[in-house]
Image 1 (cartoon, helix red, strand yellow):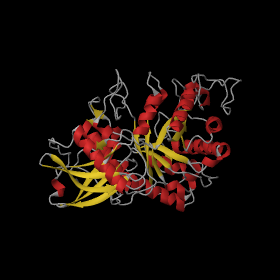
Image 2: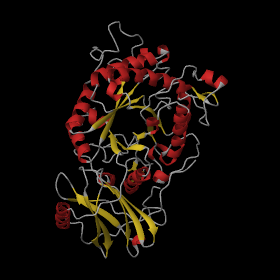
Image 3: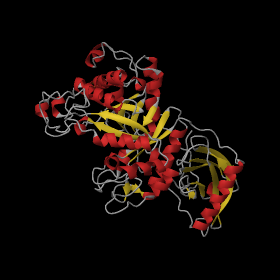
Image 4: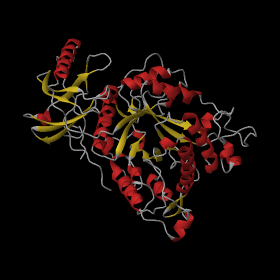
Length: 515
């Protein structure tokens, strides 16, 4: 099972300041050592890991250049961090130029990407930059659309208007997206956070087993999938389902959309009629997309934060989703590929700038622990970091790896280096620890040196190689190992110099909660 890095008291232990070992001279010497090890190929291989798990990041504000940011520089930085996939929202109400219109113009054909009312420039640039940097794209095609696509446009008081979105209208928009970007998008996901009222209304129960938003979402997904299967056919098996937030009854939405009850059994009788499941056909779902934040990114116990809700889906409760999808396959609601989980948003808000956020040190620790938590889960195909750079308002989402760009360059948080070179140390016994890590920058099997802090100096303990995806997991026996401070050192593929992970001490084993 997965593991964590903490002190014996349950909080991060401060590391003594090393006298040597972190200077530029020392790191240059380490770089030479690692280069020799790589050239001689004498380093033993680390334990195998999930070869298919990809690193995903999203920061639409930076990559759209909404407030003067440099999208090209941001994409290059994302590449240098070792990211595999960039996620973006292709939102109907943002692409359509006058989304407050209550009547559709006679000249507008939503199915055609060349319609004059569309502005694709920000998405075009993002996809082109991703391609130039060798990054995959996961596009969440979402509404709400312009007000005239609502089932009750006169009730719309703001943009976007999420009231009774039209499945037919959404399908027309997805057709335009698939026509314009066919072959350029690696994964599609349909509709963002449909279990929250900001994105779909109405929400709530029609009965104990039937959620209103689940009925609406099923129709939206089916309408969008039909267009992707027709106009970007090679991606028809890569259309994700859900994209649910951790709060707001994500599990009941998925169950209703798949015509299952709260116990993951087929809906029957009145519930079946209420959920409009009479003509249900197995859905070609490519995987379930989730945003498993802990209390909006404020979880004080990191990925081990608990919830009192039986219908929520924070990161440590992934078995709830696995049980649901297992039954969905068994009940012929979807094919087995649909059991794959794509974490597409995740992060921790920090203090500073948000007074309610977690400390900067905890953010670095928690994002590493989360990677370790999901590492042993063969169904999880992507890990996620939401935001490269904080937003400008302190009380908005501030889960970035950098502080906001108020003037000049944004200062890096400790999480920046922790993201590039994750490290988690787990206590196996007083004299044995497990070392988990990942080298994100670069590709292929990478040489890594495991070090321990001894008498104020960093001392080499073991040389290992990652697997082809950059992961390593190995056990180290050493007297007093569980009480020591550890770090990893590897080569930066850009500069050729040595880079070091955060310092970590052994913690308890991280586990999923079973219920």
